[in-house]
Structures are given as C-alpha cells and as structure tokens.
Image (cartoon, rainbow, N blue to C red; front, top):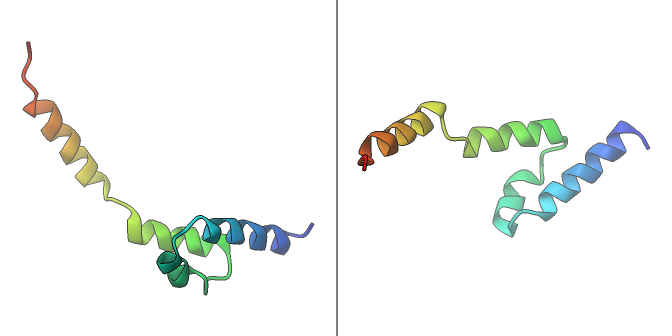
Length: 64
C-alpha cells in the first residue's frame, strides 16, 4: 500500500467522524497534515488562556 493510499484512507476516516457542516469545510483538503494544521488553527485554544483558567480556578478555591 503506497503512502498516497494510506493518506486517502486516514483522510476518509477523519472526514467520516465529522458532522456534515464541518466535512464541507475540510473535504477540499488533499492531505492529512494540511487538514490537521487547519483544524489546529481553527479549534486550538492558546496556552495562555488555559494557564489563566487554571490559575483562576486554583486561586479561587478556598482552603479548608
């Protein structure tokens, strides 16, 4: 099995796990790395937001 065939198979599995609306946004991409990069750009939360939320939760708790 060639690399292109594996790429197509993985791409198909990823698309099958998405809702129809999201599939339409990503079905034109031709390879897995470009799809994953685009998804990371769209859905990733910046690290500073995660650190802020964790710090806020930590300092917001009351010690018993």
